[in-house]
Length: 517
Image (spheres, helix red, strand yellow):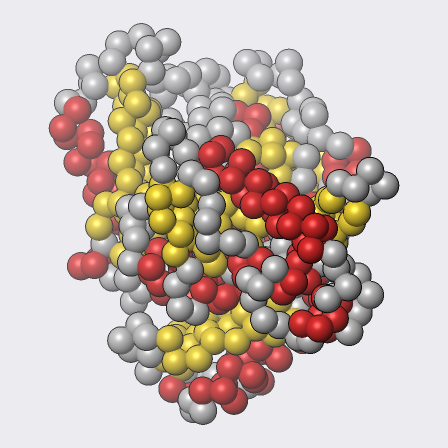
């Protein structure tokens, strides 16, 4: 039996087949198309042809996609939504979407703040305003809205009012309404958590499109016996149904797939990963085999959120980055790129644009296309461009470190051929076999995770008991997401005391992961 992993990037769609021993049977890169499904189909057909594997022997298929990220950034295909905040009178000073740009704020068909919510310790601020909520849902139904975002003050401590609102919403608007509740999506902090919930609600059509499209693509290629999963941004997988409920969790899954794939290929559990694509280079950190999570609020398409995101730095450097010589003799690399047209526009492929790949060929780092076509690049220009590329990566590597000690570096991605292997700040530089398709490999070998996060007062419940309860809840969440219970293990645990809270209150966060069913 085999696993199929696919990762859709801006330049290439990568596909890989892995056997039951987790060995790579075949890996390919296929140009990403304007309509991503043509690229996915092409990648599937190519990897199946290369491997000779019977499609009916594939029992698991995994997809990593940038569709949700693109929809937010490009303001396309976002569904109209209604926003219900439970928090009057405490939170009326700041309205929902207060700092959103006008071009994305228009997704709101209406918003309201009603009575309810909780204190930090779970004490009720005000009773849930059921009448106000029912009136709002009736209004949204009349407007034809199909998706609702529900947020509540301190719902990560106690989500009773959010759950009551969700039940009422379905009673009023019907069972086919999409309800996103903030306690299942974001972390502490009402506004950022609410923002993430709004984006999740607006992405339901995008999620249906790419999940249905991927399933149809598999069906068309005869892959009929496979369980289908989507990559999420903590380096693990989720089921199709989970992806439809929480599409926001697919944002930034590409870099995390590469990080997981790099860890698997290199057998390193702690290192810095440099993933070079055709347009950008993403740098992330492996901690205990999983991507390090960002500890600060993350902005997506101009919207500030606080749901889990990988700690990743992206720079405008890739194999297709355009190289220019200024009038003063200095050389710039990127941030613009020829992208998926590199095989038409780069010098080595018969084009007329000098790219980072041409520089790498001119300097002897790699051999692609017709090397003779780079002979016209002065060696001085090539050396300057290479120095710029090296400096860009070295600066970013330093930014990812938590100390001044040298760190192991893993180079992956098809564009990593443009980088030299002598990089300052690295104790070792490794480019493993199959480095070009690390993202698809990361998708194929990923596990399933579950996370628990709550504020706990150790004066009310002993610390040991609270942590044990948190571990059990995280394991249950992983099993619910599709993991085999016997394989689930705790991969991350935080117990952070909150000095500004009375008593002995801590923020407890536990993440567990296990193998797919």
